[in-house]
Length: 305
Image 1 (spheres, rainbow, N blue to C red):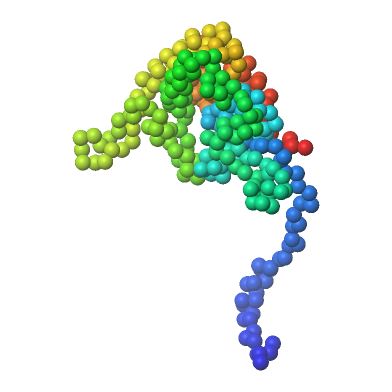
Image 2: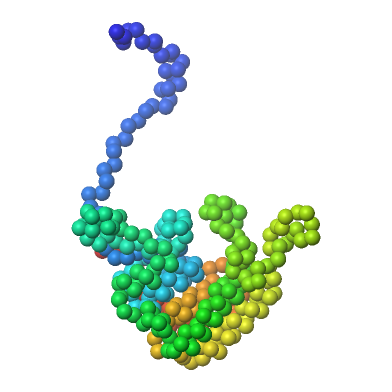
């Protein structure tokens, strides 16, 4: 049986070295005694721009869904922007978090005690369940007639094509460090996915080398953006909502998101996109009106009481 006297003593020089690095035990930190989880849905978004808005995301995809919820009339949804995009569903934002419903469903395994998270494409289905019958869920989707509904598809294509591409073009590219840390795709890579027809490669044509990069037609994109803004202004005219609808439609939510991003740039290079819109007085006034509706529909998560 080993005794303390049979242990090999620590050499004095090792003891002297260890004396400079004492092992300190800190008391454990107890968990909070009370927690106040949100009892309302929470939309996870990318951070807003502090100088222009305390609630509206600077990311057009997140802003689309903020406007969608607000113009549809859904209230009681809060927003938070302290979650990294990789924490969202499919590694992207926005993501909608839903609180657990009741204890009985949690016990039966129907819902989790931590709630449920939905990707952006599932938000319309959730809204239909919450509101029941709504104009946006009808065959006309809230538009005045079938012709307006068909026309809306062309405007959606214009906004998500020419306008989106131009905003990416005007936006300065992220630094190499930010791209590496947060796995952010380059603007040229994003342009390649939305441009029709796809841009040609920058190098590799007619050689044995594989294609490298893309040749971005900047002048053509700027011209398309100019023509798109002019067409939007002319079509809106003095109407209250786009395409002459008496109430907002999903197209109005989409249009607001792009106009707001263009009119409130958070980078120096985007001033050129803003100048194009400011020449259209009706678009500026319309964006200001809708902005007040969207801003009033949300509260930050930290204001939960």
